[in-house]
Image: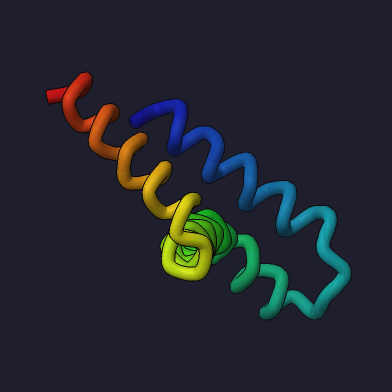
Length: 74
């Protein structure tokens, strides 16, 4: 928990220091920057699922890799 909090606080400080924007936007962006990581995760997941549907061979490999990972991690 402590390293995550430290990274978050460092991100806030860097956001307040380096962003060229009015103060209200600086504060908002500095506080909300972790949402970009969540958006990246959602986007990558969506793209992988879409690729699995559009390219069946890739989809079979993806399902196979997920099955092997599940079997190894259970």
